[in-house]
Length: 263
Image (cartoon, rainbow, N blue to C red; front, side, top):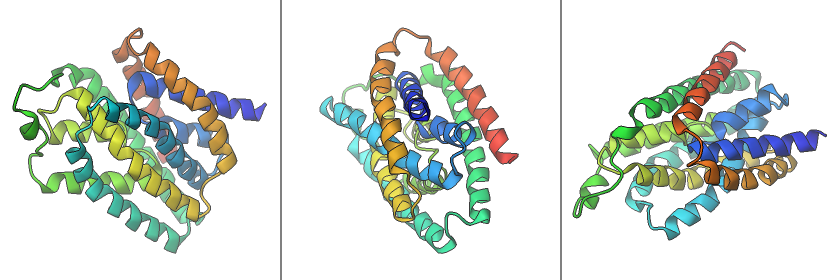
């Protein structure tokens, strides 16, 4: 019965990700901790690979559609992947099962969920202000950040956050891209966010696996549910009011964030 519950949890998160585009880490990690009693370090490590494999298929489809701006992906990855490796080194020195490290993870996770809730709600309010297409000759200008150092700095911040909490590559990443690349159409922003999340979560996920922080059996059950869930979610995307779902999701994430900080 518990196996079915894990599969259903993966299916539910997959549907929500398919409809809203919000990263699975924002939902899956709190579900594993609160509903299934999984230790925070195991929930975070397992969820990182869950997100990587789930988003990998989406990246392949987006790459075939030629909507990924690889220049943007490279600049963010140049900051996020080294930061993830440094964070993993620190975790290895401290030990992920150390009570103080566990407390740091849950507190940071709570803060990340609150930021994700705010970013999700921001997209509800301001989502329509983003262009949906590029005029001829604007592509090079649209993929140029306000300053060359900002993608590296924000990428490093997200890389650290994702490695510690498994949260940040979804709604927070999209919000950062909206700030850094205001001329980039929303579909391309979402595509870039999904694409750069794959190498980041793979590096962070396999790093956690080397620390013994991944439950492979649990990961298989979650993926068994999430893959058909994402397929269904993408088909429901145009039939369910996105603003209603994002508004409810922001409230749910804010509640989970407060609860984690209060642990």
